[in-house]
Image (tube, rainbow, N blue to C red; front, side):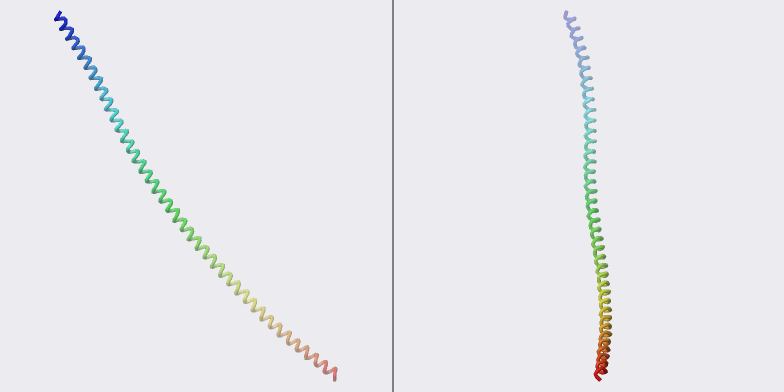
Length: 144
């Protein structure tokens, strides 16, 4: 009986040992799966960190591009305004020159008309004086 008991204990021990080996094997597989998950998680975290760093770099690039674009726009606006001011000044000067030229032409025409008027007045004066002299002669002849 003791021997059977001893044999049963020994078989139970073997059975427990095999069961423990299976549990250890299961635990090792679970540990390996956990390690693989951890490695994958670390890889994912690394990828996430790289993606976040890339995203930040892109945000910075966008900011720089936006800043450069705004600066370029301001520069172009400034150049256009300067060009427009120059064109307005050029037009103003051209109009001023044209106005002065027209005024000079009108003054010259006025002077010409005044000279012609003086000439005509002198002619009429002479004609009137001639007619008055002829009228006096005719009166003198009629009176004598």
